[in-house]
Image (cartoon, rainbow, N blue to C red; front, side):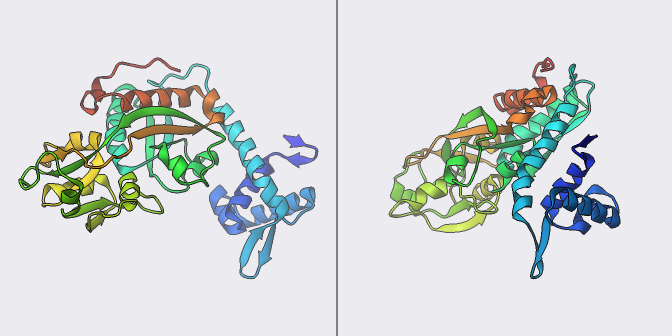
Amino acid sequence: MHLKGLNLNLLVVLDALLREKSVTKTAERLNVTQPAISAALQRLREYLDDPLLERNGRKVELTQRARDLAVPVREILLRIESALNTTPNFNPAEDKRTFRVAMSAHMAELVGVPLVRYLIGHAPGISFQIVDLAVDSFKRVEEGDLDLCLTISERVLENPVNDVSNLQSEHLFFDNFTIVASRDNTVLKSTITYDEFCDQPYVELLFNGNFRSLPDIVLSGQEKRPTVNAWMQTSQNVLAAVGSTKAVAIVPTRLYELHKETLRLRKIAPPISLPRIEQRCFWHKRNDIDSGHRWFRQTLTMIANSDSDKSAKLPDLQAA
């Protein structure tokens, strides 16, 4: 197909070039030869009357014209892909598809694991890939690298560079924080003062990247805070450390409930006010026309609002 002399297949090459800024990497990405990409780049330069890529010292950078084209070209291709992926009679029991979802490790355990069980039993051709939640997760949803992002509402407010203007979102569930300790820790009572809390060995959750946990943000605003004995990257590791030591930690209550028996944990009422957690699901507006995408979101929401030990018995969903 041509548009005013432009072969629309070149848009795929243009999109890859604008993202990779390299003929070699673009060839690898599209699984074609470098001479083919070089020839396509030359045709694009002639059509757009712009070099698109230019060398600045050792780096290759996009021209202003290329930067202006990056978002609209990507969006055009994603809308075409979304339209082609949409089937009028999507059948989760028969269709085959993979969804890519960004979420934290503790959400992978609370939602991801029961979702695997549900899909195996009800939609064996549908699979999903969990991607670690990162500072660029919203951007990757925007660019179509991810289908969904599960995160807390506060994550949007915490980082003002997060642009969610083109994203839709839906509430999944609310949760609260609790202090946890080992059942063998008999020193602490079911209620403690803030000073007593600060005097305990403390294990803190430290995410990859620039993410800060909500308890860390709250504690950083206090005049006094506990001395951290260890930083761990997942809530599960935090709980395991608490279960085998005299340390305490602050974790989401749903995760505590999941592990309290196995790790012999008990909870203690927090002596300070901690925010309520709202987990939300984010996706791009372009996917609203995709019946398969709607079905997957509906299924995920249903799983998130169900007890994890009952998820394998959830009723069948009708195709969206």
